[in-house]
Image (cartoon, rainbow, N blue to C red; front, side, top):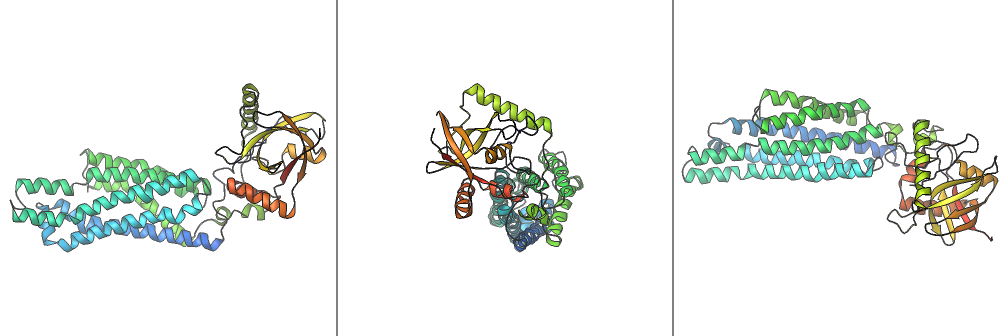
Length: 418
C-alpha cells in the first residue's frame, strides 16, 4: 500500500492518504470476462450439487434411520442405502469445499484475509466435518452386524449405541456453526465486491442467525433434529443459497465488479470518497503521531511489508511554503521510488503537483537525517520495471490504479548535491 499524507495548496488542509480501493468497490480480478463467467457457473453448479446431495441424504438415509425403532436392524436391511448416504455426504462436502477453491482467485482481490478465511473454513474445516459424518455412516452397518451376532440389534446396548451413532444433533450443530462462519465471510466478500446484487448478500446475513439457532436448539433438545421447526428456521438460508447459485449460473458476476479495468474504461472511478471530516481527522491524527513519535512511524523496505515509508517535504506550487507528506517507497539503487496515487480521490496528490512545479525536495528516512532529492516521473521501460517491483510487494496497487481515470505516475526521487 502506497501511503501518502499531505496538504493541498489549492484547498487548504486535506488528506491524501493512499489506501487500497474502497472494500465494497475493489475489483476482484483482472482476468477476462470469460474466466469470471466460468468461475461463477462452476461455483453455482457446485452449490446446487452439494445442496441436492444433502437433501437426498436427509430423505433417503438420515430420516429413515433416525426415525426407525431399531436403527441397526433398519441399516442391515437397507445397507446399500446407508452406504449410498455416506457417499452422498462426501459428494455434498466436496462440492461445497470446491466453491471457495474456485472463487478464491477472484475473492482474494477483494480482501485476501477474508478470502483465505473463507477458503479454510468452508474448504477445509467444514469438509472435515462432513468426512467424519460419512465415516460414521460407513461404520454403521458393520456395527449393526456385530450387534446382531452378539446381544441383538434390539438389545439395550445396541439401542444406546445406535442412538449415539445416529443422533447427529450435536455434530450437525458444530457443522452448522462452521458453515455459517464461512458463509458470513463469503457474504461479506460478495457485499463488498458487488459481483452479485447486494440484496443476495444481505439475505444471507439475515438467514445466518436463524440457521444457527435451529441447530443449537436441536442440540439442546428444544426442537427435534428432523422437525418442521428446524426445517422452517433453516429455510431462509437454504433458499438464499439456491438463489445465489442460480444467479451465478444464469447471470454470472457483474462486469463492473468482475473486471478491474472497467473503472478506467468508463473514464472514472465509482469509488465513494469518505466524508471530509474523516479524511481531515485521519490526516491530523497520523501527522500528530508522526511528530509525537519523533519519526518512529517511518520504516524501511526491509520490514515485513516489503516497502518503506519516508517523510517527504515539497515546496507548495502556489504558496511557496514547505509541505510535508509521508509516502511509501522502494529503493532502486541510490534512488527512492514511490507512486503518486491520491488515496480515495481520482486526481493526482498535492505533493506530486508540487513536485511537478518544484522538483527539488527533501526526504527523511527512518532514524536518518534529511536528504536532498530531485523528483522526476519514470517513463517507458523504466516505469514498467519499477511498476512491476511495486506490484510484486503489494498487488493491491494494480487494482487501485485500474480504478483511476489517469495513469498513476511512478515517481523517482534521485539524490542531488546539497
